[in-house]
Length: 362
Length: 247
Image (cartoon, rainbow over all chains, first blue to last red; front, side):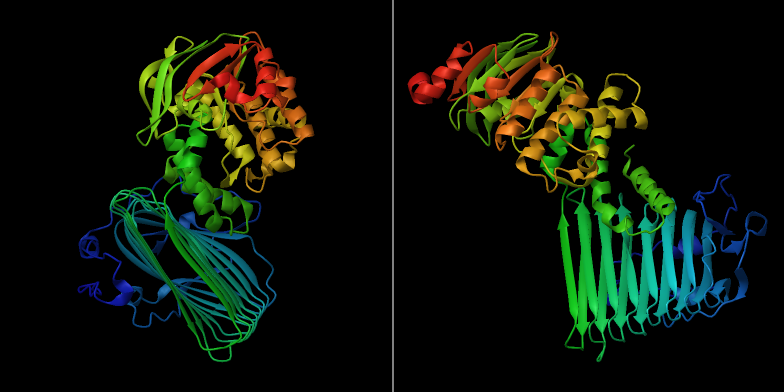
């Protein structure tokens, strides 16, 4: 890549992001150093396991199963970062009634430079899949994922952004058919800045979409989520549950929009954007938006920002819990709403552990 | 065990405790009674170390150590238990998690090994059963949706598990019906009536003292102890009111 064109903060969708570190990362050579132990989640239903090192499949450490590597159809639209991903990536395509195949785990290791990778997930009628992606290392991991769910298909996509430094940018485009269900839960609990973009469209009647997560930031970290859920058919339901935690001079920003098209009656949309400031110098931005062109819909949205409850901190202290651990416990309770939405127990527990580790509790 | 000397304390610049002096020895139960606004709850919070309660002069020595010099969690690890008049609700944290975290924090602070999950659950079940707190309740979030009586019984479960040296119980009898009062009172006797332990019972009423019989009764008024006596003093207060005795 010779030229990196980045949007400026003057563009509304980018006003809370800081991309200034990216040109320098792009110029760096990846070190190629991969940790010996990768963060696999032990689970009863083992499925395919993929390791990408600097955006390239590490075939010797991977078990592809039903996943293919090759040309991927993912449309970056005009997104400044997504358009860098290229066309070679991974594909998960499951045919009609495909039985659950076990948990798909993908670990992305970035070793100092920038890597870009597209992906495509396509589930045919009534197929089901559960995918966990974990990002580790440092550098810039840039991804674009295209998701298409046919009638009655179900996808759980859970992500852990645990990179120690640098930047992780994820962009998702999803089309959700009749009665299909997409649940995306993300945990940002590393040292890198992150940026998430999501465009979910419910094209079939009674479709379900959930997009949420927990963003944990300290130091001068920035997490930035920009999401739009568009209801185009009748009886759709969507949930956007985000919990942001910012300490020191960090910033967490969530802009979440619900669009209800003309005719998308009986839509049930809910947004809950909550922020927790662990210090007075941190920043939380929450921007819920509703755009409704149908008259028989139910859309609830709430945005709050607060601090830890002092009474609860003293209550814990009075029972012998030291301040640091008490803070971690209450903060974990705050983000639990978002993580608890993960269906598989092993995955949920692993995410809770990662959050607790970040918080410095035990 | 506990020696409070000439304690003065204020909240937001307002003087609440005005030279309170009190000694509590091992195996003793002391009741502190007094009218509203006398400083009873403040005494509890000052002993517990609640932020915002500022000690302006005086001293508190607990087992030979300067209590006021310790952080609230250190006081707990040293063996002090504060029973809350209004136990705090903590959404998102289960009772079991809360208790295990507390118990292990204290054990670590004392250089002891952490308790295993199995041992902890056995202990928690036993304490819960004795106080009418089911395992189902133990799995619920701390005090969330609990009735007043359930919250107080839950405090006693915590006390039973933590097994403190000194319990300062702030109106543990408020909000209890007769049956719950009996359960809580029996709990205090069972957990704390031991030769190496002591209780400071802050209360308005005689009824808890019928179950947990105090060795000493003190009347607190305007931030200091104005009268001390044996259990008969509580009966006299019940008959004559604070006005006559505190005056």
